[in-house]
Amino acid sequence: MDEPLPEREVPVRVSKLSQQGSEPDLRNTTPAERIKMMWQLALDAWAFKGEPVLEPRLPRHGVRLIRRGCSG
Image 1: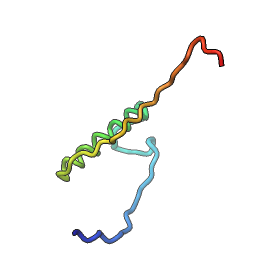
Image 2 (image 1 turned 120 degrees about the vertical axis):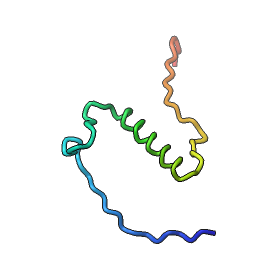
Image 3 (image 1 turned 90 degrees about the vertical axis):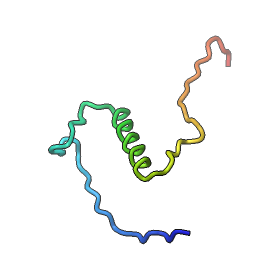
Image 4 (image 1 turned 30 degrees about the vertical axis):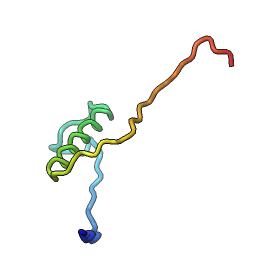
């Protein structure tokens, strides 16, 4: 069995989109588009690691049901 990796501190940098210099301009993208970009990065990382992509087993789709003519 593999030994657990030792914990280490990883520096994190937080910046606003307006502060990003040569990065792509994401100001005109929607949050959904940004999440789609991150999902592709996650898929690429899994492929690079050589492991299967773990998809969620249960779909969680938002659904709105409107009943007409219901007396409640």
